[in-house]
Amino acid sequence: MTASAEESSAEAETRKMLVDCRALLANDHFVYISGDHGSGWVDKDTIFVDPQRASRLAQLLAAKVRRFDAEILCGPATGGLIVAQWTALALGLPAVFAEHAPSRTSKELRGEFGFHRGYDRLLAGKRVMVVDDVVNTGLSIRQTVAAVEAAGGDIVAAGALVHRGNVDATGLGVPEFVYLMEYDIPDWFAGECPLCQAGVPVNTRFAHGQDYLEAQQKLATDG
Image 1 (cartoon, helix red, strand yellow):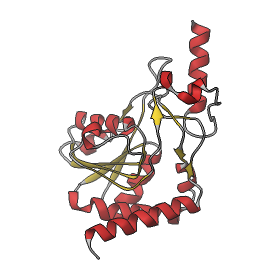
Image 2 (cartoon, rainbow, N blue to C red; image 1 turned 180 degrees about the horizontal axis):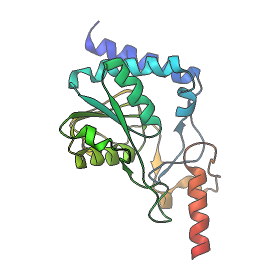
Image 3 (tube, rainbow, N blue to C red; image 1 turned 45 degrees about the vertical axis):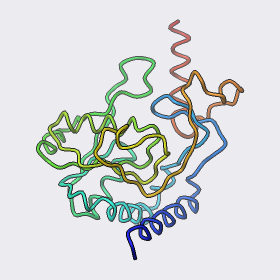
Image 4 (spheres, one colour; image 1 turned 90 degrees about the vertical axis):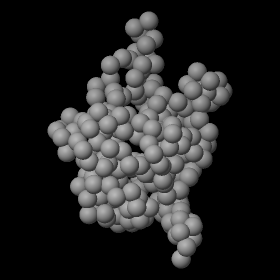
């Protein structure tokens, strides 16, 4: 099988698994970790309920990233943590994760990603592959990359299970970006969101809608 045929096969298998577990959501009003709004979401919690599914997706991703010769994998918590662990297992490598710091202002849905468990010492001087589950705007990967570099790690590439199509390797601040499948969903800045303008309620079950509404309420109260 040629490289392009293998990529097509991996994409088709990934898409089928996500469709079968009903992880691909559309035609609703979601808020992403960046604060941007969009009409679709990938329910990663559904994906990772089945360890066999998580394992198989990681095997597919491992096949795509093996050529980067990473020494350690790192993912942003929580979804990226799972992907990093399973993919590292498939590659026979160690894995660590970055996690949110407390929010500094009421406008932040979450604080920036960083290392709080001494993992930075494990990254210094190592070739690091940053992986995530779903890349929406790329904020989680960018902040994780920045944390890895601050710890003295050498970023070789970034990888993901699903790419929303809104950012490339340059936008992520990495030499190369690979992923298993693309799920193209439009998104907008919060102030320009047509769904908000149309009065479509924010989905609070998925994504970060509940955090967004609570932050908006706090701003209104403080104001």
